[in-house]
Every structure is written in structure tokens, then in C-alpha cells.
Image (cartoon, rainbow, N blue to C red; front, side, top):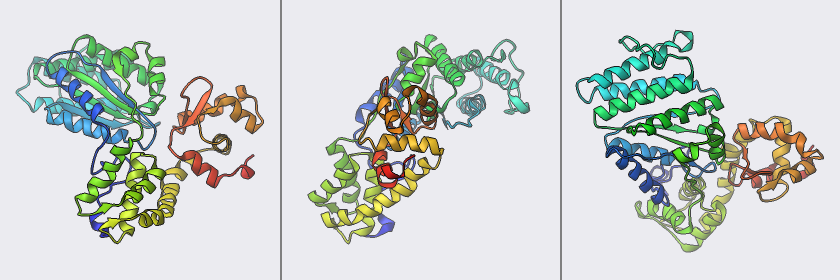
Length: 392
């Protein structure tokens, strides 16, 4: 069929043509926005899940909902190299400018500008945001990120309250925040919440995020909800495939759907990738079982090259042997003792290696003494490409 009309959208954070199976999460976010708008308290959100389940897509959807409700938003993707204070200063400046365009500046808005000015004076390398007001002495100028970011959030929240709007910060890949930065973010969100200000933080990250947040601040579980999103159920997965095809006057036969769901297991990114390849191969207008089966090698090759291999490429030889040992134990989750035994090592000696792999976002610990991959079907990729005989 015509590749120009191909309706599927695989890609990192690319919005699919149909967002299915996320009604509960979307409704919860709409309630958060409505409560903030009405002056009621609301928990911030931290969405968790494996790679490829659509966390970034959901964040984008949330941001659209917030902006359509008249809220001011700031969004950023966190990496290991992120200067968190600089990122929050830039997001806060954008929000402040947006607030100032709503109405003639009032007292709280001017005070927020002065607090943000004070916040940026402590930035390294003479960093400036071009805020032409005098810094407010004694606010956001202590040099302690937790205290200073709390002052910024409070000032922004008060300005938003004065302007009868709200503010939401959207932060993706939040598990990569350094411990002091995560502590500061949680503390600042807590200050805004305690003052019942219309400001919230919505983050997304890998499954270890609730543990990291709890370790950073013990009250994080009371400040945030941590909804976990997973692969789609069968009906939602079918709709993700069938509805975009129907809109282009095409369809799937039942056996083709079974072939695709058997391979993708309902993971949204894999569904989009498979849909793209089978669409380009099929003559149409009905996509058949034969089309689906013939497309599978192309889907696997594309995922191997663009989704899996890049992650292995970031590992050291020792780290690669560790994840290889995990995969060759079969389907996870995996006991740390079993992994160590396969490598001929003591479990206690593997701690630093595990920590490096967790820090790189390749594995996580669902519970004490248990490890698993953050990427669906990664074990299958490793077994196909790194069999036991190529181990250490």
C-alpha cells in the first residue's frame, strides 16, 4: 500500500494515530487539572513503565490537556548531562513570560520575577536569563537547591494564583536526575502543595522511579501518585492497529492481527513498528496473515538495529556479559544469585556492575534480590545475538 499514506508512527515519543488503553490515566490527569484550577489540593504525578509503553506520548497528551485548559507549562527531558538548576531556571523564565502576557503585571508576578532573578544569580559561568528586575534578597539565593527551588515554585505558584491559572512542569526520564536534584524537585513540589498553590510536577520514568523518589524524600509517596503503565490489553492493541487502517479504507483479517499481537505482546512502540512495515508490504486493502508473517523479519531487523543494539552499544564488556547472563537464564525476572552463579561470581561482588546498568537505564530491580530488563523483548534480542557460547 502507499507508504505516503502509512498511518503508523513508530519513533521515540512520536504520538500514535490512536491513543488507546490509557483512558484511566488521562482521566486522572484531567481531575488533577480541574482540582488545581478550582483551588483544591492535588497530588502530582510520576508515570512509570518499561521502554516502549508510551510514557512520553502520555506526557505530551497531558501537556496538551493542560494548555487547552489555559495552564502554563514547561517541559524538559532529563539526561545524565542535564544541568537541572539551569533547566528549571529556563522553564521558569518561559512560564513567567507567559504569565506576564496574560494580564498587566501584578504584585505577585513582579515578585516571582525578582525571586527568579535571585535564583539565577547563583548560576555558574555567569549564566543570565535576561530578567531586568532587581533580585529579591533573601529568596532563592541561599545556594541550597532545595530551598531555592522551593522559593521559585512558591513565587510562581502565587503569581499563577493571582492570574487565575495554573502551572505544570513536565519532566521526562526523571530517573536520570542526580539524588540532590531529585530531592530538590520533591521538596519544591511539597512547598507548593503545602501552600495549596496551583502548581504541579508531572514526571515519567523507568520502574525504579518510585523507589528513587522514596529514597530521596520519605514523604514522596504521599506527595505523588505513581501510576504504572504497561503493554496494552488485547482489545486496545487491536484498536491501535485497526483504527488507523480503517481511516485509510484498509483493514486486517483476524489471523493477521493474531500474528502481530503474538509478536508485539501489545507493547505500543512495537505495534507501531509492525504496523508501519506490514502496511508498506501489503497490497491491500486487506492486510493478511501472509503479509504479517512476511513482515516479521523486517520488523525484527529494524528493532534489532534501532531499538536494541543502541542500548548494548552503551555497555562495557563486563556489563554486556552481565545482561547476557541474565538473558540466557530465560525469561525474567531474574534472581541476582542466579545471574552471579552463571558468571561464576559471588553475588556481593556484582553490586557495582548492577548499579552501573541500573544507572544506564538497562535494568531495574522489581524487588529485593531480583533484576529485570527495562526494555521489552530485550532478553530475546540478547539470546539471538549473544548466545551462551560467546560469553565470558
